[in-house]
Structures are given as structure tokens and as C-alpha cells.
Amino acid sequence: MESALSRAYAANPALNSERARLRSVDETVSQAQAGYRPTVSLDADIGVQQFEGILAGQRAGGGGLLGSGIGSGSTTNGGALVTRPGGASLTINQTLFNGFRTDNQTRQAESNVLTNREAIRLTEMTTLFNAAQSYMNVLRDTANLELQRNNVEVLEEQLRQTRDRFNVGEVTRTDVAQAEARLSGARSQVSAAESQLRSSIGIYRQNIGVEPRQLAPGRPLDRYVPKSLEEAVNIGLREHPQILASFHAVDAAELQVKVAESMLYPTAGISGLVQQRYDQQLPGDNGVTASIVGRISVPIYQGGTEYSQIRQAKELVGQARLIAERDRDSVRSLIVQAWGRLEAAKAQVLASQAQVQANEVALNGVREEARVGQRTTLDVLNAQQELLNSRVNLILAQRDRVVNSYDVVQTIGRLTVRYTSLPVAAYSPKEHFDQVKDLWYGVSTPDGR
Image (cartoon, rainbow, N blue to C red):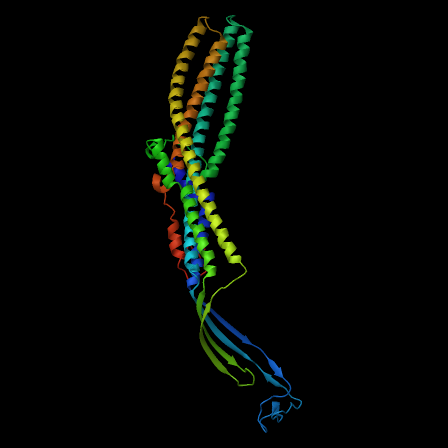
């Protein structure tokens, strides 16, 4: 089973898609930190400008337009002044203070990353549990099919013996009909068992990624199951990813209040500009401009939108806290239910084993009594059916025993690769986070895509 769980952990599409989504959430931290960084832009332009008319401010006797004499108050004499204005500018803007908005947005993004990491852990546990369940279902249905096929063989022999006894007059035609009816029913059960096995194999292929081949018996995770229900509840309330995700969501909601409040604070920034212009008004009229400007903006009143957004954010904080409390109650309930199912499965295994042993003794006794005429064919068929049913129940109980142990470990938040030490390389979400959180530029993802 460990090999199957490891394969599911590494290749399950649902789990891998959640990992990809988490990597996209990691980028929100880098996006939030962009508020600390300067913005730089380079602009350039070039064009053609034609002027016809009077050039004010020209000295008398000065050079004319396109060879025509032009002075103060003179006009163009059939010519036009053509220039090619253009230039380039470099602008740098740096925010110095924005009401701690960038700080809070960065912390909020980090809280969202932590929330999604817990969601990944929850998906991981669900994936491993589904894989264990599908593994045990294949084992269960395989064993059930073997029992049903063996039952057909037994009933075929029973029918043969009944016909022989009918031929010598020991039983009636009714006994033969009863044996035939049971055999037909057993064959239909074989068909149903085959169909159920094919369905379980399909689910196994979906959850684990390969077809099942020679599955070894499954073992319960008793070494990871707490010793008592109280201990299980305490562990679950501390470690279950659904609860931890809710707490991180509360942090993110509280930080959103601070982000909204930053709209009421003044902002300060500095801008630098270097500009080169050509042919600004006349050919050869070139110049360089450089400036550094500091700006402070103090909001007075902006229509009341920011106040409404603050109140809205505070209400969402209250909602997030209620959701966290709901999730605590939900996890506690799931642990109690899973614990009860596990305890019931343990008791059912013991009861089913005793029932199988008793039915084996009873069947042997009924067969011996039937040989001396003290039991009917129907009594033998009923005893055979009772034994079959008890064996099927034992298989179901053994399957439930294993699956419910995995369920308990899942509900307390410990059905993970790191805790159960499965033989597979653990996925580290922090590795990608560290690679992208401080990137200033670049469009390639760290894994090369």
C-alpha cells in the first residue's frame, strides 16, 4: 500500500493542480512588495511640425523663413517653417510613505499563501485517503469475487450430489430444484462481484494512476492513531489544516482592515525626471531638463467610499472568525465520527471471525446430519449461505478496519507524506515561495516553464 500511496502523492492530477495554484498564489507576495520598489519609465517621441505665419519676437533684418526675409511682425513670403520635434525622457518614481499600505498588503499576501498551503495539505490528505480506500476496495472486491466463485463450485458439487440422491430415490425433485435455484443465484452474485471489482479498479486507476497488480494485504495505521478520543480531538484542533487555514484567513481579513484604513493616511513620494528635447520651437532649439520633485498628498474627504470599505472589511473579519469556529466544530465532529467507526470496525472483525468459525462447524454438522437423513437439502444450502455471508462480512469488516484507521489519522490532520514517512520525495511549497518572493524582474517560472 505504501507504494500505491507514494504514486498517488507524486502523480495525482488533482493534487498537482492544487500545487500549481499555490505557486500562482506565491506570486501575490512579489506583487505586493512591488509597492516598495521604484517605477522607471522611458518615453520617446518624434514628429514633423510645419509653421506658416508670423514669428513674433524676431529681430528686424534677421534670417527669413526658408530663405525669405522675416522680421518682427513680418509674415512668411510663400514659405513655411518645418521642424522635427522629438526627444526622450527617463522618469523614476519612488513611494516613500503610503499609510503602511504596502506593509499590510505584503503581510496579507503572506497570510493568503499560508492559507493555501494548508489547503494543499488538506488536498494531500484527501488524496492519500482516497488512494488507501480504493486500494482496500480492490482487495475487498477481489476477495469477495473469489468467495462467490468458490461458492458456485461448492453449489455445483451440492447439486451433483443432490441429483445422484434423487436418482436413487433418497430425495425428491424439490430438493433438486432448491439446489438449482441456489446455484443460479450464486452465479448471478459472481456477475455482480465482477462488475463491482471492475468499478473499483477504475477508481483505483483514477486515484493512483496505474492498474492494480498483485496487491499485498493492507495494514491499518494503528501506530499513528492516538491512544484515546480526547487525545485525537486535541491533536486535530491543533493540527488540522482546515482549522489552520481558517486562522490564516482571519489574519488576512484583519490586515484588509488596515489596508482599507491606509486610504485615510497621507502619502509621500519622490519623482526624478531627465528629458532631452530637439527642435522644440525652431530648428536647433534643443535642451536638456532634469528635475527631482517631492510630493505629499493628504486626503481630506473622498466621498465616503473609504469609510464604507473599512466598515465592510471589519464585518468580513467577524465572518472569518465565525467560519474558523465553525471549522473547529466540524473537525471535532469528524474526529468523533471516525473514532466511532474505527472502534466499531475492530469489534466487527472479532465478531465476524467468531461467526465464521461457528458457521464452519455448523455447516459440517448439517452436512453429516443430511447424510443420515436428519437434515434436508434446504438445511445444507442455508448453512452454506450463512457461512458465505459471514465470510463476506469478515472481508468487509477487515476492509473497514484498515480504511477507518486511515480516516482517523486524516481527521486529526496527520495523513501526510511527512508524518507517515512514505517512500517518496515530499513536495516543498516553501522552495518555490523563496524563489519568487524577491524577484524584481523575469517572466520565466523557476522550474523553466
